Image (cartoon, rainbow, N blue to C red):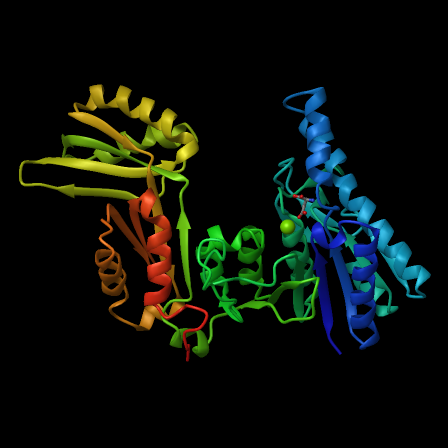
Length: 409
Ligand code: ASP
Ligand code: MG
């Protein structure tokens, strides 16, 4: 019999009836003979409500106390579920983060798990007791309550699964899996039965709606198989696992887009050692994360230097560059925040040539101009004019054989 971690998200525990539904699922798994650890989120909307309440007191609430406050959301749901399970005749106990000994660093609000002393959970399982653990929370070395960042109970669940050596971590949510692209943008999007950790990490923009991305990095590191599925039906969802031969047959498994970036170009800067660091260091010092970078030297000894930043940081980054351009003698600084990044992702790319060509041809056929290109081992991304995002996503989805009615080997 297996050892299973089942995590239920906010909508799955949204009210008492839904928590009763969760109890039934947990009980069914337990009755099949498995050992079960349940990890819960707060009821949907509760964490937001608590944050709003704190902000009425102070726009920047004290971080330590905010963690104490936010952790109550999960404290409520674990107590309720354990109560229901007990009335159903099952042996179950709730555990808060500190009781499950989920130790984190001291970063209030975005703490990272450092270790899990799984002894207490293991003892409960030995007695065939269901452990109902509060997600999203832990404690630091000084006994302070910490929280793991929004969506953090996914990471709690995967980390607990790793710590106790669970056979699988099931993430029950309100969507039924990971799709080949955003179903709201492309009606032909298809549910993937399997996706690799690395693809999932690259698909952050798609996958983040389904799983906190940090939990995927955790799953990969400790090789925890994750099954993302709906808590409202019995259907199989998507398995997030190590890559296998099956996945390699499919060249591309997902098409993603991101409209949250902006582009900045410094025109005609001197092509000399140190120029890239001069341009980008002040951006990094301002805490702005740069994504793509392009620089190409011309015979004239001058170069255009282009990079992208999150749209929210665009104004600030432009100001920094305008100031800087005077110092380094750039001819001009040009910004554009009407861009989108479309990407094709797939581990199969490693063994197939011609993926980039196919992507460029597809965009060319639709008359979409490519402004920038970047690649990784399993991803090709193009920056295009924002207004063509939908067209680009749909045509790439079709071109790579991902459409729902298309036959995929
Ligand atoms: N309740 C927390 C949040 O809303 C953690 C979670 O649901 O994963 O972010
Ligand atoms: Mg969530």
